[in-house]
Length: 296
Image (cartoon, rainbow, N blue to C red):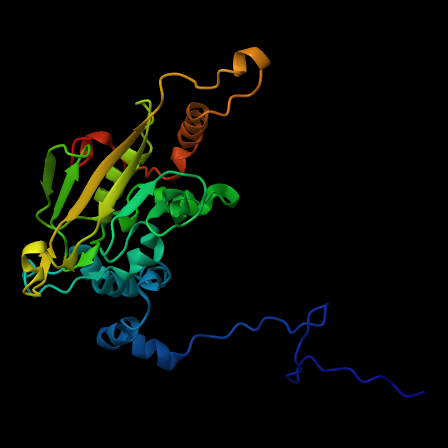
């Protein structure tokens, strides 16, 4: 009777796990690669080709040297350009890292966006919901929400544009006075986001609030339209709009038939209740009413 062949443990035979899949092989790091990355200039040339979100997270976990290089490469996203942009030749670019995660409430400034805290999850031409942002994610363990909402989150201190924007113009009601807030080192996303959150989550009126925001862009003004010259709007425009609740219910049949009320007042009350119970999803831990750039 022939004997069955057995693989030797010492002849380089590939070991397999009990389920037939190849076992994990732990390889030692390449000495050549280690020597290359030990040279700071070469490490910088290689790491600068990585996406910004990878520099912000994974790269900084490798070692202290990589962390220092990654932070140096990311610094323009926080500090912006040193010089104030020329009002005639400005070509603004949206921070690509912020646009990837907060593009729901940002655009190129061609149209004003109507932002509110609705729970439809739908995106229309102008209407945008803050519940579609990653910070509003309620997934398992709220891990994504906690990462965005934590105190000191990096996105809050990033410049929105390159070159930076230095001014916010806020109007509390249509036709009201305009409040101008100027930030010497550039407006950060956290400062704009806190104003948005304070407005759309406010249900004390009683009224439902929404925010119309117009981002900077090179637009043609009325006076320059005939000449075809571009006039740069070098500021962010924010305007609050309120929808007050009706004082009385219009369902006259409710008292007689004891039916459920379906008037506009009841719908708005239900909507305000949903906003109140869900506004925690979009509030950052760094939010403080007294730190807002404008008075709401």
